[in-house]
Length: 181
Image (cartoon, rainbow, N blue to C red; front, side, top):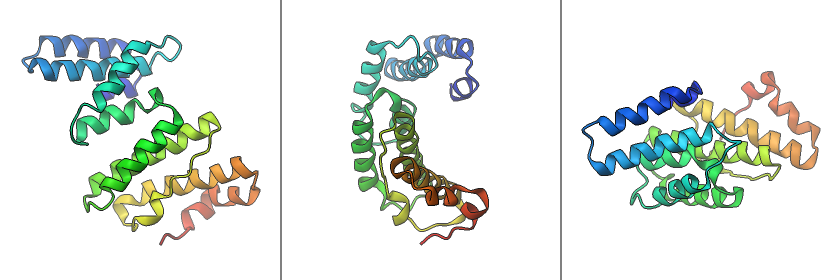
């Protein structure tokens, strides 16, 4: 599904839905997998939005009791279905709850959510500031994520305040040499 989504292959996503339907998954798993596929198809059709599917996905995400990989994938891919204020509140809550975990995978997931919020806020010109990156020590596994967070943070500072000095930190040479706490 993810491969088809990232290659913008709607036909392949439709074939995946058929495979899910014909699979031996439990009915509940089929429902969740089909909903994920519908959500990805919905994301690929921004001009023809289906509010019913969007609402169903939003509802299903929060019916999953724990923030597991399925819930993360569903939410991360459907963040565009939520308002910027909702996304900011949801991501802040998730970060507060899970940032103390030592797992690199969890930290990468948290960074991904925070980066998505920043990108969406830039697209909407509603600039959010999520400072989660400053509280996480840098290590080689997280360097890309922290770099992206830093870049978007300075870019938002520029967009928000027209502070051209912030663009200096977005410059490739200066950006790659910046140090983290």
